[in-house]
Image (cartoon, rainbow, N blue to C red):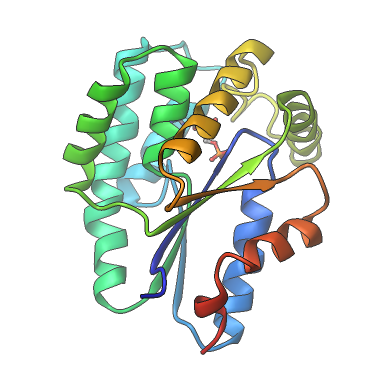
Length: 214
Ligand code: TMP
């Protein structure tokens, strides 16, 4: 069975959005019906939650409140956007999903991983990606790319909450992603994201031979 629900994961500056757009264009050009979406912010509710979660100027909420906002975003996104698209037979490409919560709130913030798995399950009703690509690169490199991008797009003071976290935090997040990939090696593949966008795209294509056909 070709994968229908594909997620991309990685630390800031790993090149997820560029790769997702390239994959979506490529697949759409070959006749697939593709939904390109993201978390947080993939539903109407999520678009209201995203600035609450990421605005660096807003007062920081406690990590449990932050967790439940991500889960609210996911519950709405899964039920109102992703599941209906899958039922219509579309191929769903999603920028971040349940693994982000394990990596950031679990490995990064230190919340209990088993609890997070149960809460993820409750939020999604058991929906899980068929395939996940983790875009891996050293956090120093990712953060400097993310800062450059934010400056170019004038986002520095708006969506900089996680970019402002320490290098140690992002190293824990990276370790988290690599551990998830080891535990679920069938679903999760690790790509080397330290090169350019074209090289990353060709690595990604190797994992989707059947989706790329049609
Ligand atoms: P993005 O624009 O790179 O996707 O940024 C979203 C930020 O939200 C990123 O720093 C990771 C964070 N995040 C979490 O901490 N937990 C989650 O469950 C999700 C979906 C995102």
